[in-house]
Amino acid sequence: MDVSARDDTVKAAGFGTLIEGLQAMGIRSIELSFARDRSIASLTDDHRFPLTTPAEAEAYRKHLAENGVSVAGLLVANNFGATNREPEIAWCVDAIRAAEWLGAPAIRADTIMRSEV
Image 1 (cartoon, rainbow, N blue to C red):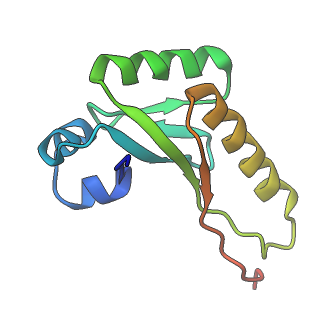
Image 2: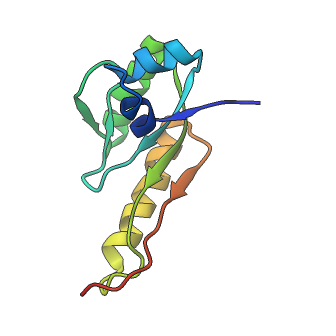
């Protein structure tokens, strides 16, 4: 069985960096929030890595390898109840592409289903 931790959960637990938290828990895999700006968190500091091209993905794969960590999946927290769903769909498509680049087996769509007011 593979065990992973979510990036935001590790930070909320009070660890200074993601890698510190993963090491303390003995976990070598992480679920990363794929932000609307198409970036993901660094394991070693507060920097975010852009993830919009294969070259950017290669840089992040190197970062993962240097830290002995794999990506269990990417999380997108979007709103399929929005009046304009196209940007939400595009975000999911970009997450699927980014997950493939990173060798992650899944994305998790944490969808909100509410209309804009």
